[in-house]
Image 1 (cartoon, rainbow, N blue to C red):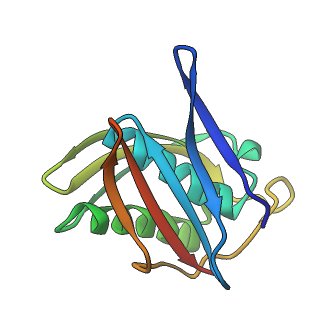
Image 2 (image 1 turned 135 degrees about the vertical axis):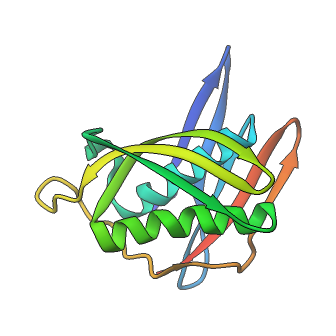
Length: 152
């Protein structure tokens, strides 16, 4: 898979949202955010960009999502697993994410998207699972960084 880099701007600085990384037989990404909420939103964008061409997704519906865990890295896996569940069971693809709150390892968010339409949405890869392999969520340089590997 080609390296895809998404960026966002803060003033004159352009900061990365996420980038896909090479991983033997699997697919991974690093996500970045100025806040924990931005980090989780950017991770969700990377997740759906790995599945479909996210630009083709229209914001036709909104879904509220809540997940919890016992640690920050486990919260990232729970978040992405919930998105994978919605994709696998309801064929939902999302384009934008608003993380309303992250507190005590509980996340509340809304996601906008639509039902998968193979005629419009190019399916890039199949994701079987979000793994704990090389997983991390950490504060770095005044912002946040996460790494996630998918089993494909």
